[in-house]
Image (cartoon, rainbow, N blue to C red; front, side, top):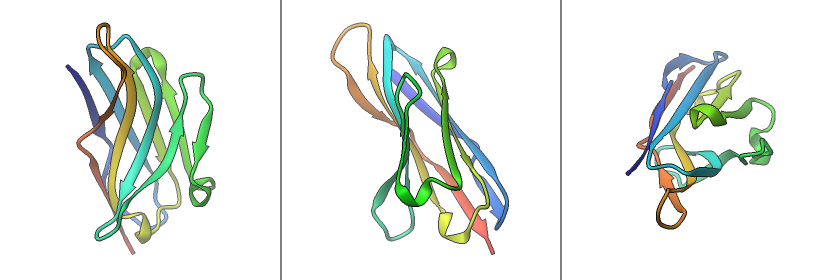
Length: 120
């Protein structure tokens, strides 16, 4: 079994910052790309950013300025730093990871989501 557990969401005022964390645990041999998606109320889920095991990061163009993705491979953890938060950043943020277990095929896992609410 593999679990992705997000943390760090909450209620924050516009202009503030948050750091989201997502830790993977369980039957893990290797983790490839890890990423963050978000889904605002009434909207589809969008990729925010993703990062390879080698540290190469890819962002949705509109996210490049205020969002920073990073990872700690030793801790099987990916982070998302969000600065200068805006009300339109309000969404549920989901962690995603491609994980190779010790036995079996690589699979795309999702966390349960963490709510970020930005007040104006």
